[in-house]
Image (cartoon, rainbow, N blue to C red; front, side, top):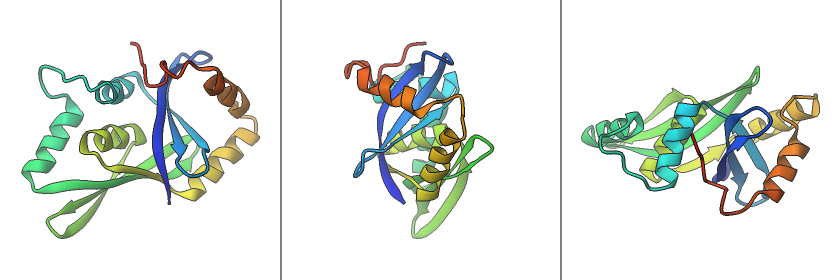
Length: 160
């Protein structure tokens, strides 16, 4: 598994869809994951340390886990099939490990709130690179150029 950090959350100007950018902390490889607007908003709220007046869904989930004496150990983006990423949330309830299937965007939103680490299986990075090499409309060179030219102050800024 490869430890990742969130490099940014941006609107892809080509598709007008939110994209969360994960970066390999050692080698600097990027993993873009296009996500929904609501999920992007949940991630952006936590990245910007904005507290809504009432708990949002991911806040509620974190609160429920806390009440059940359960903590998020880590999240792992563990598969890429038919252009869809899959993730698992690894929990520890007292001394019992649990693993729950999740969308990556929900896993990332919960990881941020729980201060849990984010990992990607090495095979997922390879599949992602192969997907782009096969002519996906999400061109990695365009993405790399876009990230290189992005204002660092704008990385992490997400606007509805």
